[in-house]
Image 1 (cartoon, rainbow, N blue to C red):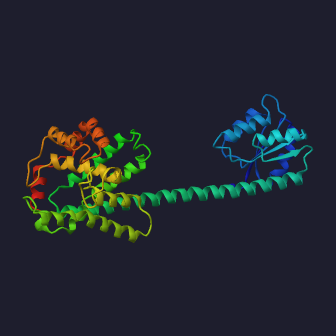
Image 2: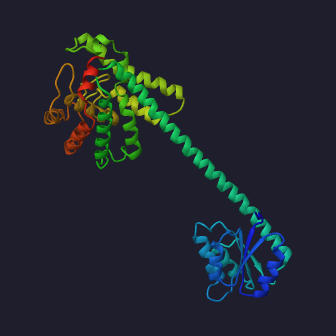
Length: 371
């Protein structure tokens, strides 16, 4: 294997090709071309040159044109070009550098100077190639670690949501349905002037990932209350309401362990704490009203109620889609953000399709009832 750097010499004078080539051969692999068009072909032939020595004044295609061609191609833009020319005016040099040339040597050529310039530019290219390879490695490493982080995030959510699932009488499909409802509704609202600056694609993806943790706080509710088939007493309901605070605190503890800002846990905390708030301020735990309720929680509130309405529970049969839509319509401006209800009504068929895609089997409902 020949490890010598490859030099391409381009000149329409045979004597120049012969003399320069002979001087360089002991230290370099030498390729030659007698005009611009042959030079373009020679550049792309293996092995790719490490440096090009390029005459400017050539028939058919000038060295300036060849240099522009090389710098316009991703495969060759990094190759240094040294112009060899009889043109010594300042304007000639300026045109060469503007075309992408790295250096400029005026004929007659001094071989010691040529060798020194070639050596310098090859060293610069080697350093640039090293940095490029290093940057490529770092980019790949960042991409790999980012992918690992996303997997860890997803697994964290699944583990925490599954923990809540083991305590509740809802099925895993409830989690899948609600996160898909949230994403569908958020995407619809992207075109709304009020939400366009907030609901970008990244936030929607984070909301989709965070939604399964909305009821994580239910792990702290006693079974006698959480699984009670009948109506809760006022005292029991007060305890049930604490699942929002318990969920927020659990996620907040996880954030502190990470010791760094976490977008998906931030939204998960918002959703867990505030998804029971109502637009008119009659919800809990803080009685927030209107736009004081986080957007993430407003989305989750509508998605959660719709799914509760259309799903079978030990204390009620599933409501038909049309009835559920009617109840949400009635909650416009009281329970739900009016703009979100309007968006929901426009994509209600998408909600129905999600519900059907992730519907609970009889076995799943029966298993959930035994929790």
